Image (cartoon, rainbow over all chains, first blue to last red; front, side, top):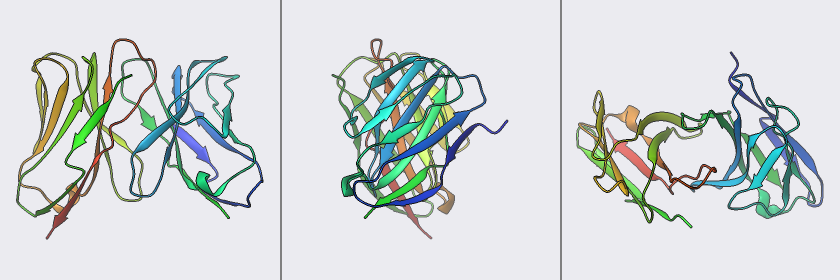
Length: 111
Length: 111
């Protein structure tokens, strides 16, 4: 099993550009999450999903959008990138009540 | 909403010294998980505690869940340089479906 796969690993965006961070899991997990982690800081929940077709906002959703059309995939869309969105983005998944598995992260810089 | 504190924020220890981090929630918890993140890495699951007063051990790591299920601790005996990283608690209450993390305790171990 590959677990949780995130692409790309690194990306540099210019202010105002848009991009989609990809996340896929092959463990048939119903819960999926997106977090951002600023340097030296903790994990902030952006969006989460409890199953295909269902998404909800987390702590810091502004500037982001998500979709969950399949159990496996949970892409995160950044519209009109801003320097404040420079961060490391982690995708995670789990079954309810069990441990979460994280992807390797996407390091995004907005210049 | 649920508020989570972790103390201390940082801890520097000499190799061989003990280390403890505490996680405190403003609400009664259903369960709590602990994760470790090595520098430059992604969070990795360590343990889950469910029962009031539960104590679990993993080699030099001891995890405890408070009697009132509002706090938890992680104790490392005789730290090693491999213990370096940030330790996050992830408390779960009975109401939320999302998955938030505490701010973390960053441990550095001096050889």
